[in-house]
Length: 309
Image 1 (tube, helix red, strand yellow):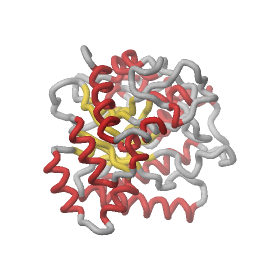
Image 2 (cartoon, helix red, strand yellow):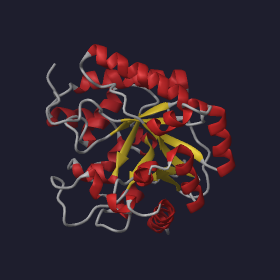
Image 3 (cartoon, one colour):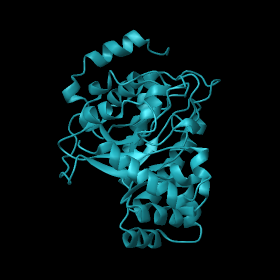
């Protein structure tokens, strides 16, 4: 099957009312404040602290929510148990809101895709054991410039298979937009795939940088519908770099660039429940600093970003 044209995709999306996109979502009791402040461990990944060291640095800075990387957790589990991880999380007062994994679930090759599903199932089971209820699902394996274009109907079928796994394991896959990717680099594409998956647990994982990098911007962001966004990656970017020039490593702290952060937060703010705002950067300058300095700055920056909202 050929890939849907932009016109076909937008036409399909136009038939979906913005207020009813991804219906039948479970209600969540509101917490205090419209946002949950979270740290993605990419922000201190360069310091190579290990699973517990990263948690300790985040907790010391004031974070009570984190996104962990599956590989770092698995390294920890080579010599420790999930029960030990849960105890340490409880001691530090930390909740794992989401996890970053890289299972190739979307690829066309059936054998490789099955390996990806098997990998995802194992990772979901491990995450469930430490109390994490979400996992990122980016278009890994289909992101490079030489990757084939994946039909969006097929992508939706494959995402639904992940959602079914999520129901089995209790860890829900968040469909992630990657602005630099050959596939799923536009907001319209991930919206279509999530809607076409026709599953009540479909969710989108969006990012300030990726919306800019992929050229989506924020004009269509209100069309997503608030229930579909549980976690949102926040960061900033400098005025000097165009979408074609900017890379992952160029992301900076919120407030240190020109991204329309306040506009984005006003759009995604959900009166029914807090949205997890997870600060995700890959800045080599930050990696050269002590982790405690980076986490402290990160917490101050994300607090300033949401002040008054």
